[in-house]
Image (cartoon, rainbow, N blue to C red; front, side, top):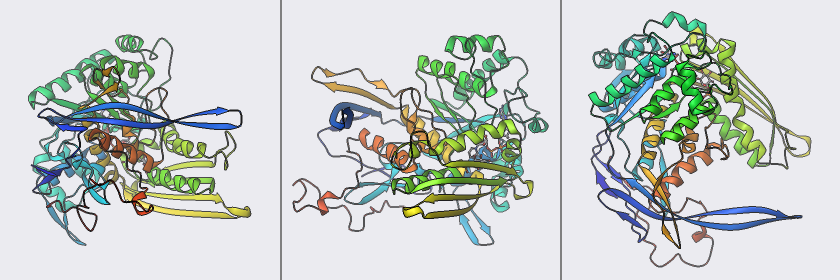
Length: 538
Ligand SMILES: NC(=O)c1ccc[n+]([C@@H]2O[C@H](COP(=O)([O-])OP(=O)(O)OC[C@H]3O[C@@H](n4cnc5c(N)ncnc54)[C@H](O)[C@@H]3O)[C@@H](O)[C@H]2O)c1
Ligand SMILES: O=P([O-])([O-])O[C@@H]1[C@@H](O)[C@H](O)[C@@H](O)[C@H](O)[C@@H]1O
């Protein structure tokens, strides 16, 4: 492993270096020749035929980590202010007293900062040691909010963080002020109107133009090389998909110029980001990415990702249902209730906004249920009920209660009941960070195809970043790609794509070397550590 200069919560950061004739590290890129192995499945009468298919790619990942800006839509919200505080607390290595003793800043809940991956020989390394990634504390932050309250006030309003921590951040965060927002009444709940005191005036076209100026000004003033825009504002109602309005890129731009009433604020931010060459990620469940928006991103070769941060109750559901179904146990009834008292909960107390969330929270089991035709007849699904209630007193401390009732052998039943309480924003903030950092890494990856005729021109990844699915309840995927919600398949996707970028085969957990009577290939290096973890000098 190479040592690099880490700037936060550890004096040193390490990077894995692969020794292989298929991987080269030059000044500009890490280049890896990679054999991608899949299986084509066809049927011949009663026979299912599986044919191994091997495709040769070449990955290149730029080694230079750019000065990166993150612009949050809804910066003054619970998630936005909490993420801002978390990054500053880590940057300044803050500690604070609580009734349970002294707490130190960390980034738990972020897979890029706090998770490890198996490298080989049962040695685990930090996920962010596989490829050069942005150091969170180097991120420049900015954003918009319909509420003009500065970030210190927003942090106080959110009531998420201990007072002793807040006090250490007030001076720096009070200087951070959200930019005037693109707001059109009728998309978020009407109960949000009391917050509105910081908006761009004018029609949809002038809003897009102002948002573009904001992005360009932020980028220039901080000497940034790339900017990523993430929506962590309130959940909007779904927009109707209308032919001639938002079905193509040209129609969408024309509809914005015509100030068409069905174009949502979130789509205005997305269009502005695309036109400024920026990645745009949707952390809420509304259908921001109308077909015209996706087409516009593809035309401009920018990235999109989303929808709806997968932070708590749904994240656990995408593990539990995967466990049950893959164990041959049949979930028959899933009831997910939660209540919370933050502003997000207030916004969701309106039926139109709740409907957006209900959809994203309900579809999360479809892939797992659809994978097992032994348990489920075609089209058969478990009963699935989602309830969200707004209870102001509990604030950001979301209380989730779930009941999973499954059919087991010989008419038996297994009922699993879960009670899950958490500060909602402390689970979502690290996801926002991971979305930004993985998306930024994707901006530096290109792929070429290798065959007998040579190596093709290198191309960026497809515009819709399905690799971000792990962080999302309702993953956006490229046209024709399957939607995967099972959490550990989603995590494996991220790990194995990063492994492919450095020429390593996917983790397969077979441990075949311990099953067969033949030793590994002669050049297998001796295990780097006896206990499975390399000490990274933290
Ligand atoms: N665990 C979580 O917190 C979690 C999980 C999944 C999804 N989400 C989603 O993330 C979003 C934010 O959650 P939160 O708890 O921070 O909510 P919040 O209400 O505290 O913050 C949202 C912010 O967006 C601002 N806003 C509303 N419309 C805007 C616009 N058009 N432009 C700019 N700003 C606007 C509001 O003033 C508010 O400050 C919500 O949509 C929520 O559903 C949150
Ligand atoms: O991620 P998750 O815990 O399943 O879902 C959460 C909901 O339960 C909660 O009511 C809502 O306010 C959050 O935005 C989040 O969507």
